[in-house]
Structures are given as C-alpha cells and as structure tokens.
Figure 1: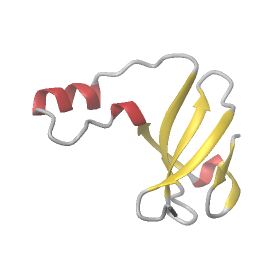
Figure 2: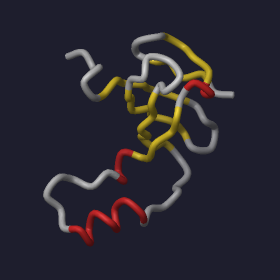
Figure 3: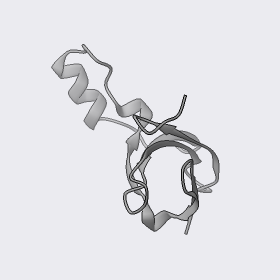
Figure 4: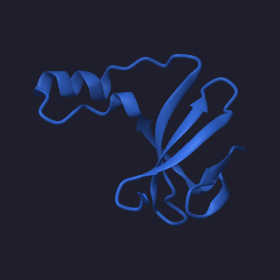
Length: 87
C-alpha cells in the first residue's frame, strides 16, 4: 500500500484517497468538443513519472497533484490544488 503525504493531514494510507486522472488528460478551457473528448478519453499509459490528480476523499476532501512513478509507485512530490490550496 502506498502512503500519500496529504498537504493538510500528513501521511495517510492510499485507501483514504481516490485517483481521478492524469494532469495531462484535463482539456484546457475553450478547446473544441472533439479535442476535449480526445484529451479526456484517448490517453496512453506510459511508464515513468507522471502527475496525477487525487482527492483525499475519506479525509480532508482536498484535491492534490501527486507526482508518482508508475512502475515503482514512488511518490516524489504532492501539492494541494483547488480552493483548499494555500498560496
């Protein structure tokens, strides 16, 4: 099991979090519907480091971006995003 270091609650078990998607699979505002659908639903699953969006659903409910290696599950960085993120 992975430990994810929540920016608000500290290290917590992966079971408290829900994986949403990779950061690069979020379409930018104003993009065409076809491009948005392609970005949302046509994506690869590369090996290596990737930025992923997670939510601490069974904790503080905050959203965060987790930088994780897809093969080793090693987490190198976690940052809060959304309204809960502190400047």
